[in-house]
Length: 280
Image (tube, rainbow, N blue to C red; front, side, top):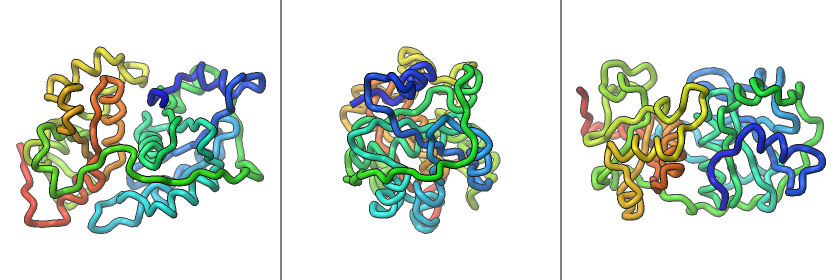
């Protein structure tokens, strides 16, 4: 098992023709909430050899009672990863142009379904281009199909009925959405009662890379998310639809905290009007 991040220099070395280790499968997961798929941006320039993955089509089921981005059907996800060339015996690197927020979803799903070696490009597409990384345009003519077999259950999840029992429930959304002052996406504003707010932006330094493990440990310990609480299964994260919460889960993994994902997140929580809502 590897750590959750890879640097630009490490990825460049891994993609070099003379690299001693297995060349990674690179997935481009560009996405914006409410926006069009990122295929246009991908075609205009991407990491050489990267294959585009559509978050809405490949990394989520259709919206419904499970929220705006429910976890995808296992067979659908497996087929999408195979089309993208993913195999169990090759490492995978995922990136986006959204501070790692969409790429984190791909990382989590692959890890959840049993892939042993998946990493997010630290600093995202901006770091790659800033460092002068090579850029490829267009789309590959032929992607060799992978043999990845999805085996769900390798990372912890919690569902709505268990959420109130958690000692630490981290809300990864912007503070104004957490407080219920504004809600640009979902029909109800506020947060799950008892949740603490650690916006994803706080995970990053001024260069858009994840902060050091020591800094992240201090950040999350301040809200009760400690390694000890994680070991007891008392920590989980959510966001609007279960996508960007994984950014906080990665940050906590770097800090030594094991955290579960509430996949339905806020958009799933509010599908039941009997569930309580809190605002500040």
